[in-house]
Image 1: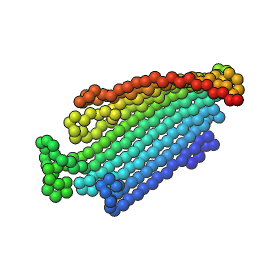
Image 2: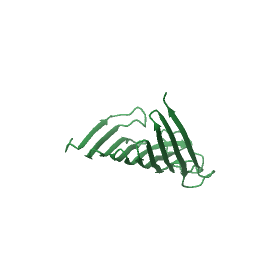
Image 3: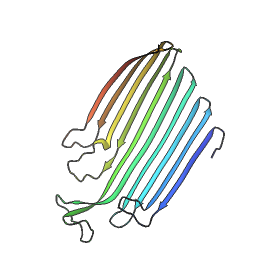
Image 4: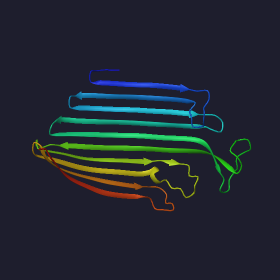
Length: 232
């Protein structure tokens, strides 16, 4: 669809159904929805967004499999002139899966009823995995004069997920974590063919949640790069 000359929309829908599945994780029903849109109110401004949703399921006895992968993104680019510009972006994703599982019993609990096909000395449970993640970023471009160009920005992502912890010593780990990376770079053109560049990046990662056999993992680092480009 194209409601106006500045606004475009594209979308698609796919639907699949099968009366059987080769293995438990194969879906019997699938739906896939996709939509993208962009809006350009000015020659120097663009707003875009996208949505993607994949749904799959195999709802039969002792399988009960369901999963989805969903994502939404929106971004804005502003570049009024050659001296400055701005990028803003936000994204959200959610990966989810659930299914019936059999596993060997290592402690107390109710054993699997006869006839389920799981075998002896096993337990039956409903396993799930959920990983909702948010992402944000911005970048500013500054070029006060023709010979100097710089970029300053910040990127961050965070996940607040959960799952079934069959192992009592298992901890959330990366399912509950944050990652950030501010950065800055500058380029100076001494004369055509001769450019000096400087770049700084910070990387920081940390985990939240319960403490297990080890403390939550965390690290940070600073990376500085100085380079020269010369043509002859």
